[in-house]
Length: 383
Image 1 (tube, one colour):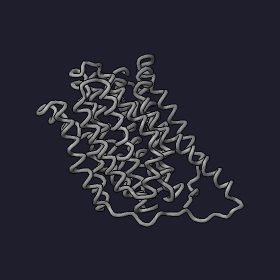
Image 2 (tube, helix red, strand yellow; image 1 turned 30 degrees about the vertical axis):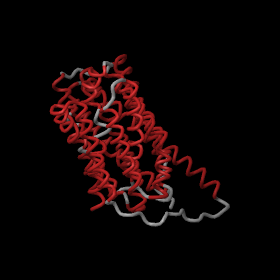
Image 3 (spheres, rainbow, N blue to C red; image 1 turned 180 degrees about the horizontal axis):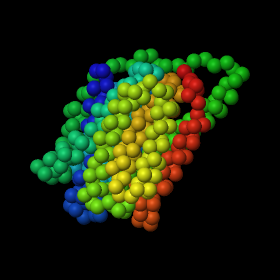
């Protein structure tokens, strides 16, 4: 429990001081720097793409040395990136700052935290992974008001300095209080004859899991950027769209509570399959009923996304074991990180061209993800 509280609190402020910063600070930042807000978000997307490249290396470092130092390094990079951004006088420095932020996000957010827990707890990490996502699920709830308060009092540069200080003086000490990892986990010896077959089966399973996580990540990132506008395109008024979109966060937290209670008795593959169908079910309701079904869609989409965030960490752990988890996890989620970075722009074009019918794109991708999960067996476990 102590580890979950320490890591969950650090994750909350790491997310709030990185991923959720542009939502409120991009506009004043762009005004003062004399650039379009889209340029700030482009720099942010570059940072997200960088996390995909760095994920496997971060995972290997955690496999070897544990997560305390890696997570703390991530917070230090976030602090440096925020400081560089606070001092930026033009677009070039802004992109440099976000590149440093990308290094920090690769080493300091969920996937690094999941690998840290797998290194500490082995295959018993599922409950802890759920616990930190429950705590950090409030990152935007805490981060956006805090960013607004600091920006109102000190300007956007002062807000960035404030977030940098939080990374240095809160997150790093919390991560350094985590337990030291046990000896390096070694995979169980396998008979020489079937080793090649086992590797092929393992590669196939890893690809299927990667596909499911990637399409889920695309939908989460796309709807995170466009949900109110999409609902208005489907006929909802602005007020109704905002009210429905506001259900997204509570639905995610509620689904994580469900995972922490009832669904933890199931194999993560079964809960992931259920989660993958929730977005298409909500999309079908919205298409069939129209604007009155907007809250239903938001709750189903949010609930599915909440469970898939946990499955992103627990499913590879259950299928492949804790040995080499960090490096493997970095490779498995790399496509999700790439698609997550591109999704807001790509889905924006779809919404512009198709309106609410763009939901068929994300619903179809979710069905593909569900099909990939159906090709996996709950009996497949490797230690």
